[in-house]
Length: 38
Length: 579
Image (tube, rainbow over all chains, first blue to last red; front, side):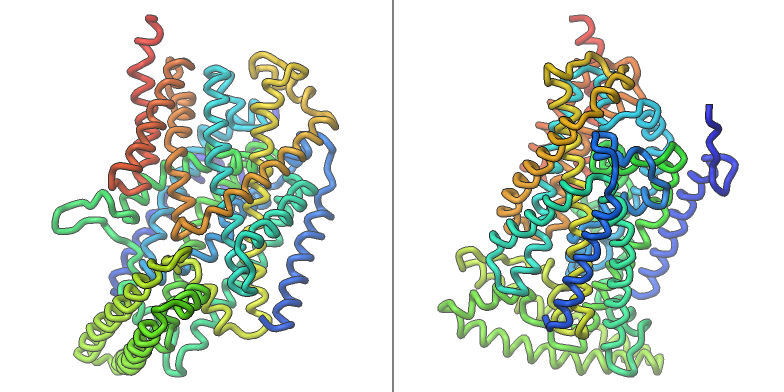
């Protein structure tokens, strides 16, 4: 059976965490953006 | 458009088609035609996923949406990264392991043939209708530019697409989307740059943001609450975006064959997952930047006089009616207000430079009032327009286009028009390819006596059965037939208001239920075919009724449909089993 080689991280779960953390960061940035320019 | 613009447009489009045909060499069987022989690396999968979702509608309507309603539309994409994670964990390994051609093949093994056929039918109905709208979107550009009849333009536009899709197959779709994206990004970046550079000398990018921010256009995050609490009919807020958007994205990317077909072309599981996860990282910022262009165009029109209505043909309609004099009076008031706005906005930007908070507060209030007055004039025009037969009172899709034609330099207009065309081609080509694959695999091959095979476990048998020249020809024929169907639908698309919303509303009517079926399949192993089939049928009728007779924001329909199918199927399972 072929062993899958995950890019950058050792586990897929790190990729999933990264996507979610980046989303939270975007929402925080957008909140500040909205407040700053309103 | 100048001759130079035409040259840029024709060269770009011809280049794309030739590149697509050059890259389209593949085996003349279904594996080659629908899945590019499962050979794609993750970055091509990513571009194909993004190119399929981002149609001409994205680039036409989104800036207009920001112009009229502000940037809060971006919240609609907040659920997407979460959906990418779930699909990468649960959906992709199953599809990959079974080596399916369509997502619905899996449902026959898990449930039964009627559930597979019903789900595939819902997909075909929804995707066929949405693709019709996607043909109409670029057609309005041609009709507006050249004064062509919109119905004939639809036929010409759809005709070109059918030839392109029939010749290329999935491989050509993926490779052209790669080139298309480079051109699209270059075009949109240049458009954004030009908007800012056209502003008066002392007004920079940040000043432009302050202007649109003060006028409520940079409302990226909204909570959807008012004095009466949470407003359930509010379309775009952080909650409907995360929850409703999550269900919509889960359904779209996990169960819509136009997307599943893209990541099934990947070389292996790793390439599929990487493509999806990268989409989760990139999509929100990309949409934010497209909407930002719309907000900047709004600022631009504080310094310059906008047309009273952005669809020129509709102004001409009123000009040739008994309301001609009313229009001329409205236009002079509109120009007067615009002149006042220009004075006040300059005062505002000067105050920004001096950090004069009192003047900033006063002028921003004045600007708000002047913009409300402008909107009243526009409403007055729309009321007159309503009385005209065949009038279209929504100009959201024309705002960005009108700006491009009126203000962008020679050559760039042609490039921006090309961007809209190739974005449309990318997504429509993928959609026609998926409509054809579902028709061929889920209906033609499944129910044709010559190809009858029972149960899906026969993946190897199916692989053997499908690899024939005859099936390849049938698949091309179905692409043609679906293309014709979509052109017919395009003829009725001009009554649907904002096109980007129309596509999303349409999706929300069916996606929730389709997703519910897949959720039961993946996570509730005890539920069998009959229970899920009845639950799906009942919930589909319920969602349509909810849309027709309630004021619930359409994004919530996805959650209602999906959860409804899961709950109802769980309730029905013991009852159906007893009988």
